[in-house]
Image 1: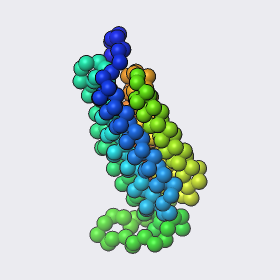
Image 2: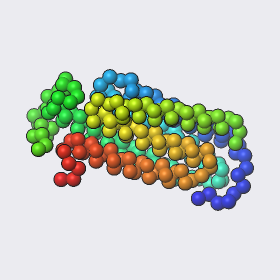
Image 3: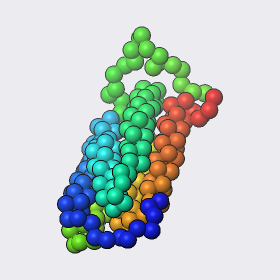
Image 4: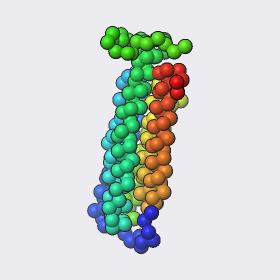
Length: 130
Length: 92
């Protein structure tokens, strides 16, 4: 926690940097989510939210770091934890989801039928779950 | 807080609200289950970003910890749902 410091006005450059990075991050998150609505198939839609998970999270992390560092007169680096955690976990989720979608598209009628056939050297072509 | 940062944070909150509404539309209307899970993933990331913006707005670190908890539980939820779609059960 920041202690009971006097919350004086921040210098103008810090407020401008914070505001610009906050708006950039929110705009990228909005563009990514709009792509989720707009794109036609699942395998295209899965690409869109990564925009918010990369540029959005990092921009808002920079905004948080700048604001709290200038406010408390000490370096506030805890926010990097969130960005690193999201950078590590978002690809894992995406890989799981795409594998599940590919599996379902091959074995059921749900989803698209125009997916490439399973490779013979990989373990993608297992029996469907009982 | 000068009007620059005030209105920048309001604009950021508005954009994140629009993003959450887009994700909510896909969550409710997605044709397949994987679309809904993708939308849920996007929704919790947008909510986490909104927590960060609110933390800047109120100059409070509590929102930051809430954002970290949302990131943790959201990852667990999305991964276990995707695992369920892939295998039919979460832990085998």
